[in-house]
Image 1: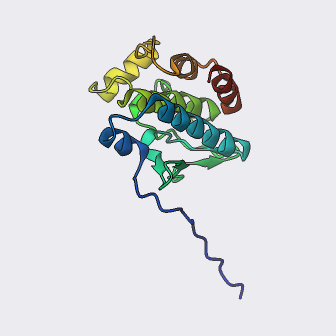
Image 2: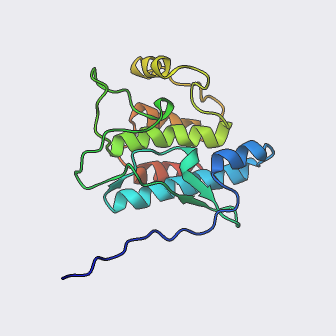
Image 3: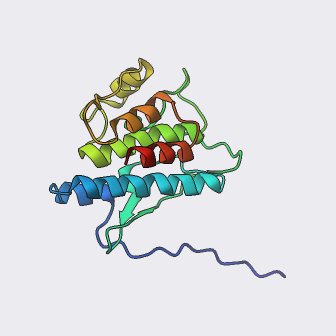
Length: 180
C-alpha cells in the first residue's frame, strides 16, 4: 500500500504580524518604507502569477512582516492554480464588480484589481471606501467610482489596477519601477 505524502507549509516567523496592523501601530512609517512595501507586494504577485497561481484574496492582511521588515504573501486558502474556477473571495473593497448573480471566477484581472486596493491600503492606511457597506462599495465600483488617488504615492498605479489598465502584474511592476 502506497504511503501518503505529508504536505506542509514552512513559513518564516513574522514577529510584526501583517502589514495592515503594522502600519496602524507605526503611523510614522516613511514614504520610502511604504514604497518598498509596495514593491515587495507587487513582486510577490508577479511571482505567484508566473507560477499560474491566482491568489483570490489579496489584501494588506495577507502580507506578513518579518523581523527585517520584509513582506511575505500568505493565506493561499482560496487560491487557484491554472484554469481552476474559484469564486472570488476578496472583501468588497478589494474585488472587481460581480455579475448580476454575484458570481465571477477569480482571475489575473481580479487579482490585479485587489492589488490596487491593497496598495491603496499600504499607502493611505485605510481600505478603499472605508466605512461604507459592502453593497454600497459594490455599487460604487460598478459605477466606476473609486477613491480619489490624486496626489498620493503610487496613485496612478492604484487607479490603473482598478480601471483594468494592466494586463499582468509584471506590467504593474514595470510601471512602478519606471516611476520609482
